[in-house]
Image (tube, rainbow, N blue to C red; front, side, top):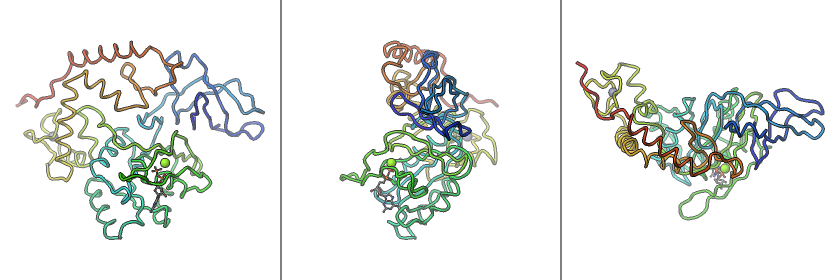
Length: 351
Ligand SMILES: Nc1nc2c(ncn2[C@@H]2O[C@H](COP(=O)(O)OP(=O)(O)O)[C@@H](O)[C@H]2O)c(=O)[nH]1
Ligand SMILES: [Mg+2]
Ligand SMILES: [Zn+2]
């Protein structure tokens, strides 16, 4: 499914159909929604009742998905491209890290792109590239204005798979995709206001083919992604931590890498201080389950929690169970988490 507009889905076909049909405008079988199967952009679906001359059909089946990116909600993502501008707006390393963490949380490849390279002198660009290389990200500096770096980016995005471009608004994501494929003609907004934030002109998620089998999704910008996950797995979202663990194992398997005895992760990296602070935030969140459940809902406006799964929010008519029973469920889950929670304090000594 390549695009969702109100209650209609555009489905791109695996093979060209009669009447040279490549895309079908589809509705969804009600029983899909009733069985709790929510279709996201990026999902592979089965279509029935096809009216070829009209180009219409009905989605009747959803294939299992490998990954679901929460924001924007895109299924089966294989590459997350995080874009931040070198200027207008200037990079915010904390915000950039939050984007990188949510990208890492998908478990898929992450590519960091600095946009608007035309606005900074070469030396300043090199300084940013060096800084994030030390974090573990060999980044790309590009400019849609001058065209520099676009060929390299096009090459990366032309690999088979599904890439999602995300990042703050106004950094030039839509401009970049337009630069890669001018016929897209995506809407671009002037950066406005004293905060130099772009307006959110990209309103819905849509997939485009950049090369055969290489799909790319532009996404609406948002400015402050929530921290993903729980304290236990959090360290693995940092290349700096993964690097340490490749060389040696920590003494305790549930090590939080906060200077525990026998920890294999050093504290000698730029983002270590933020890491410590964020682990603290996550532990606090985990210790207060009611706040946690609310935080989750606020954190993911595109999605809601259902059992232990995340689902995109739907129009009122699709919603079930009711908001009230959702709240009760979230509350019950919170209680369970509290009752069965693993202690997050330092591990007991094993020796
Ligand atoms: N100087 C410069 N401005 C750019 C570049 N790319 C985009 N812009 C401007 O940045 C603003 C936001 O661009 P847009 O593509 O809508 O950003 P998005 O919100 O990330 O999709 C627009 O005014 C663009 O003209 C670039 O490479 N250089
Ligand atoms: Mg945009
Ligand atoms: Zn450790």
